[in-house]
Image 1 (tube, rainbow, N blue to C red):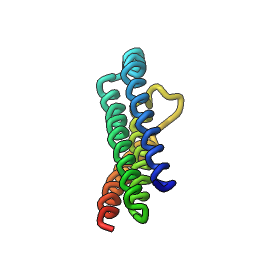
Image 2 (tube, one colour):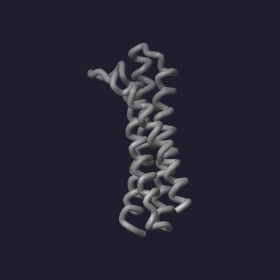
Image 3 (cartoon, rainbow, N blue to C red):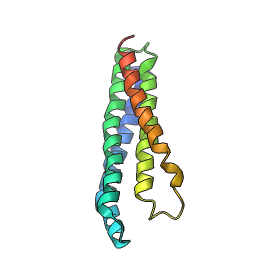
Length: 136
């Protein structure tokens, strides 16, 4: 297994761990905070949980890219897929976490709204790169 393949799989494990921890944080801590501040807890938790859901799915996709790269070490597309999945998780899921918590944060996160679609494009690019990597 080459270095990049190992790195992608380790990143997948880290992002997966963070997804589980973030989901638990939302379910056990944020819900109470939203209610305490008289915010629309159901709506905000839906946004937050969408970030967790996509992060978890793409943690698995990142692991897939790493495993496929182990079998196709000369692929130029599979490492790109992994980096696109990682970027997508940071931009898409990260922006949703910030947007869901915007009323609890001491700073503006208005800039995060336009970042979410960039993350979605990274996810789509990652899946396209997996497709292209399997055609090489």
